[in-house]
Image: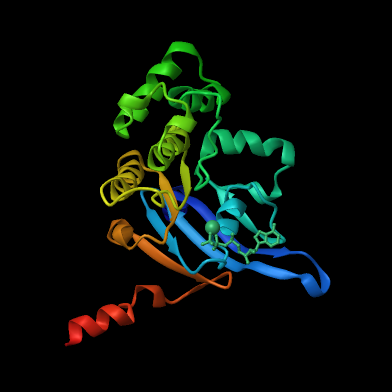
Amino acid sequence: MGAQAVETRAAEIVLEVRGLTKVFGSGDAAFTAVDGIDLTVRRGELVIIMGPSGSGKTTLLTLIGSLLKPTSGTVHINGLDVTAMKESALPEVRRHSVGFIFQSYNLLESLTAVENVEVVLNLAGGGGRTDAVKAEQLLTDLGMGHRLHFKPRDLSGGEKQRVSVARGLANDPELILADEPTANLDSKHGPEIVLLLRAVAKELGRAAVVVSHDARIQELADRILWLEDGRFKDNPGLAVAPAEEKTTEV
Ligand SMILES: Nc1ncnc2c1ncn2[C@@H]1O[C@H](COP(=O)(O)OP(=O)(O)OP(=O)(O)O)[C@@H](O)[C@H]1O
Ligand SMILES: [Mg+2]
């Protein structure tokens, strides 16, 4: 029974990061951007990572998503050690298990919004009409039903961001990695996107790691982690800002 309990607990873990380190450059120019990070994220969890510019947030996400090779440390996704896998096996993991939402959108300029989402579904081995229907549904859920056939150049920053979110969610990934997904969105659409990521985590049993500077979405997180100089610190970022303190103290 004991063994079974351990097995069930282990199955809940979607992401397990141990001692993850990235050093850019070498010799005198060596710079440690991510410095021995440990992180465990379970099914149903939404974790937000905050921290100053240059603290290593994007580097950490790209390491977790195996877009970048760590200097040392391990990343397990659904129990699979992706840091030990051959380069040639990684695209398969990325297509099926990990959904990325980048701040830079990563949209294909020659394709419409709906085609940009469809192409992700096609790559994962879907096909034809079902992909089109699913892509339309996802975009409509994200409030983009009236922009399905627009090309990226005709979309606003916030609209492009929503297409990028739809791409990240298209394959029903176990693990969603989002780098500042609300940066170009207003006070209505920003929290909406994170609410959607939260619903995906809770209702579909996925795990989400979201990098954000956005104070509006903090309350939606199960955990907030503060990254500084490539390491997690106790949450100084959550303390009341001095300016706010002054106005409330008067
Ligand atoms: N390819 C690279 N070569 C050398 N240094 C790099 C490289 N990529 C990132 N860095 C450095 O690593 C540090 C962390 O960068 P990173 O992009 O992870 O920061 P960030 O926390 O995402 O910042 P921001 O909030 O501005 O997006 C920075 O000092 C950056 O200049
Ligand atoms: Mg960044």
